[in-house]
Length: 458
Image (cartoon, rainbow, N blue to C red; front, side, top):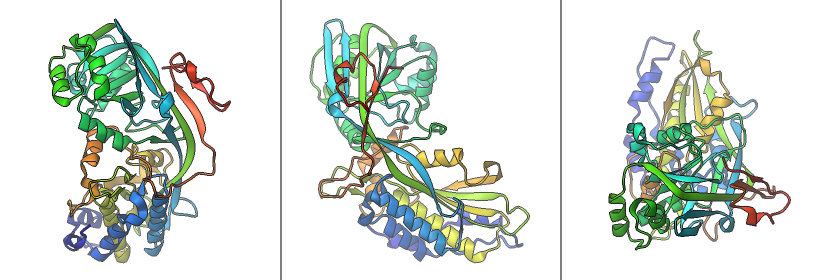
């Protein structure tokens, strides 16, 4: 990884804006020590931190480092006696043998399996569950947003979506408002489905605090269906009940799909089973107090410090997603700004540095901070967020195709667990099996231990 180009990195726009909050007559932006930026980015993106995935040892080391940097700069903690704001997180690991989709229709009764055929999308506790109902085809996400009048009745239905939501995640809100109980996103491109599998991985993270509402993940359960399911899911639309799974054949099927419509007699029963355990993570926050009459009001410079962790190796066998551009560089710039302004020491407003965790899993740290603010929200004058700000240098893994696939989905992605030979962060708490699914679809798994619970579909 090359960091030498950071010597010329400058932050004129950010610093000039913050300089306006200084108490003196000058508005000249203070100088940033680029060595501070280089040192912070180099450490955070090093292999030693194993990609800084939230809830892992590497993520905890990154949080401890940022707290130490706040202390070194002489900045005050916001979280009581320390710099870290603990996040109540739960890690839900999918139980593959019990996670299935059954599709039934005229002449069809097929059960599909987790990983090879489909994966649950990311989600909070509420949408990470099973669902069942009659299928209704809704077209693409952009069709939902711009041609709402074409949508069929969706009350109690499972929406069948061509391709994934992508940048049109608000389409899920429309489906939920129309009464849909879940959505199957058909990813009919084999390479793209493999990338989604890699980025989603085998577990999901969500906040255990029920008072926190996600600003990013819709409360609609969703799965991503791969090419092996595509022919069956498209049969009520095309009349074709068998065929190849290659991309050319599936693209040909998709090209002939009709307008959105109900699919009488076709049903989906989705069963999702997870084992859950608490994990440790935290936001890091510190403040430089202002010296003027507006010191009780603050400007926030924020940057998420987590990345994707350890995943599928590349051609060279490297499985650590270092996250230099996303977002070690943004964190390093925030530290550089804090150091420069602390050295000047003449701010009219206070300055808050906020380093959030869980961004890659759906803005978890940011949502928690807004629900449980360490500074009154009505006294925050503005936020400057730094994210993925560095150029693509060398072979930084932050710009990998898998990461771009994760970014293309409006529902943020996670990575698979540590590769063989890497130590995993282990909790002392035993895992707890939870079934969130259609009770009928999951009856055969009633032999789980007494700690298991089965919930009906939405």
